[in-house]
Amino acid sequence: MAELHRRVMNAFRVHWAKFPKATPQKLVLTQKQADDLQLTRLYGSVSIAGYSPPKGTFNDRPVEVSATTAGVLVANDGTEMPLADYDKMPTA
Image (cartoon, rainbow, N blue to C red):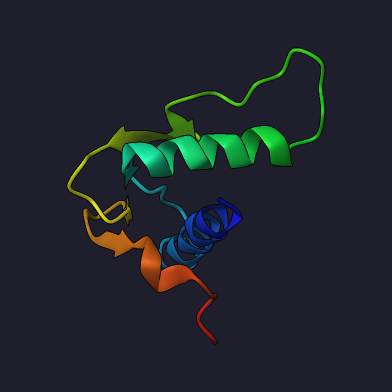
């Protein structure tokens, strides 16, 4: 689960570096990936009574569920950024 969160965050960071004033369109994940990401956010966040991270969004971007995806971040220009490519941050 934490691996998926790391890849998602790395993909967001790379996107923001390439497009400083733009946000990604959305995340496209399998149902299991979406559930795992939600659990990581739930158990990895600061404990605040009654707080639960919003479902269906991540960093204010929509999370779309698809059975045919490997997991991608869709950049602001429509380019798909496969999360498998973002296990580690690229070197400068």
